[in-house]
Image (cartoon, rainbow, N blue to C red; front, side, top):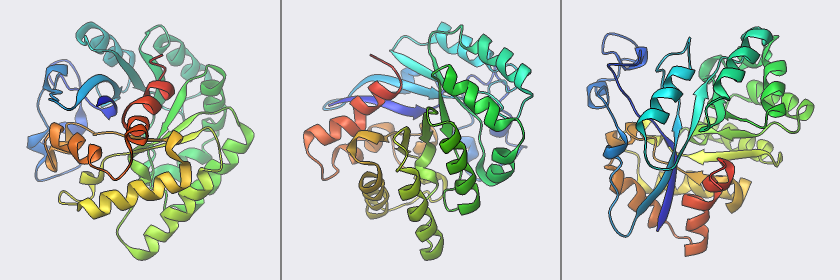
Length: 284
């Protein structure tokens, strides 16, 4: 079974800043030391019946002031087919945003950008520069990786407005939009993924459950994936590892074996684990 891992991170602590990985800095995860180390392409080990055909590197805080440095490091380091999603602050003054975007686009692996919204989603999406900068992304045919809790209906409402104004903006929801095992919050999450799925240019990636619960159950994982597929269909859902953070829950091999064991046919699994990522992230 061929795989394109559509969400992972590589680290070189000697070359990058990675402030969030420093043990003295937040977030203060008690098991941060398990991931606060160099992670390279050769650590992406899959064995039969799995084959890693490529991956998508999502920015990891290498240098948020000069985000092209991370891309240059990747392109000088990696040998497997890969695409990169760079960090770029969508609240920057548009002239500065465009200058950084132009510099990033010189790198052949760059297919999109991420600026983490999380709990500041509403404020960031309401920022006077964000809409114009997202329009610039769309004009340059680059995607935006959306990381925010989709239970936040006010932020989703603002996002829906932006999508109506910029219908060509291509968005990929990271980590399934942080579903939570709380009945009310889960209900808000489910309502909002259904709303966002009405936009044909919005896709969703299922990964990162270990960030909320290191010991999440197979049943919970299957439920989240099933709800995403019910909303977005098989053609707009991707499964990904979030490696190396996924190691908090399972090995790289076991993460993908769990996906391969989902109750879908071979063609559907190939869409979820390979061909959707191949298309969305422009491997073709």
